[in-house]
Length: 301
Ligand SMILES: Nc1nc2c(ncn2[C@@H]2O[C@H](COP(=O)(O)OP(=O)(O)OP(=O)(O)O)[C@@H](O)[C@H]2O)c(=O)[nH]1
Ligand SMILES: [Mg+2]
Ligand SMILES: [Zn+2]
Image (cartoon, rainbow, N blue to C red; front, side, top):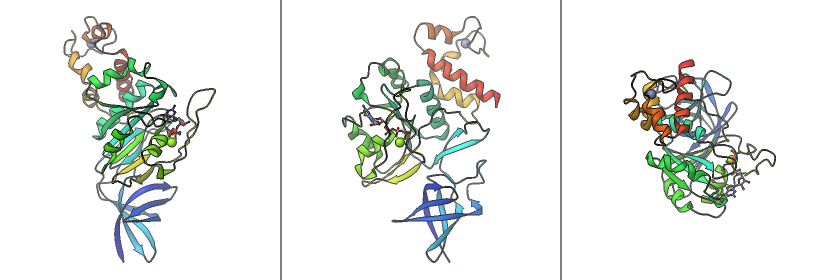
């Protein structure tokens, strides 16, 4: 019996597509998997997992999952459990459109917190800049000042794609963002060989139509892997401590020391340095709102 190593590139219900060297196998997984990094709370295989496949002739079965280097989690919609978007990725391109579908900084804040928690580098990517930058430029510079890398690109005109390509070489990159932002379009633009399906926006709502239906890991011809994912409408942050949340909002945490009360919630207390900073424009109200909403959710669960 031979054991080979592979990487999960897609999940098809109970069947798993695994890349082993230059071959792609579709195999089942053993019911009792050996989770080498300890059994995670959501013990399911995900795209990006490194696995050991026991070969029986042409056929194989997954017997073990290697310890994950990292995993990007969110709260599963409507259920009180974690959902893993992908494992073992180096960076996440958080893709939003410049105008349509309307980019939501609150959703971006949640992606950024999740990447921070997972230890995955986040790259804010504004696509469709051919639609004009006026609107996003009202809030985007705040993120640049916080030290985030921000790309302004257009899959349609090709603007900025050279930078994207260089970022992708020899790394594993997750593309995530709302439906219709142009994740699949960007991937097709950096490598037309992907031939990914692209969908129009709904005329009535201006939102995407959830064209991509499952996460898929794909090799790039110049080295590296990308993961295209289905659009996410909402993003619940899964299990975060107050300390971790504070670390993800450094501009708020830094200022909170100047509040009169050490346990200030920045909502109604007098002499609150944070509310003063929001009033003077030094901290954006949106960031404070994101911080408070995520904190509230974390305390509830
Ligand atoms: N104007 C403009 N439209 C674009 C650009 N990139 C993508 N689009 C359009 O945006 C729509 C959605 O693109 P997709 O690539 O399917 O978006 P997606 O993020 O993969 O969406 P889901 O798979 O549903 O999550 C399509 O009609 C694209 O033609 C761009 O740079 N400029
Ligand atoms: Mg897509
Ligand atoms: Zn305060």
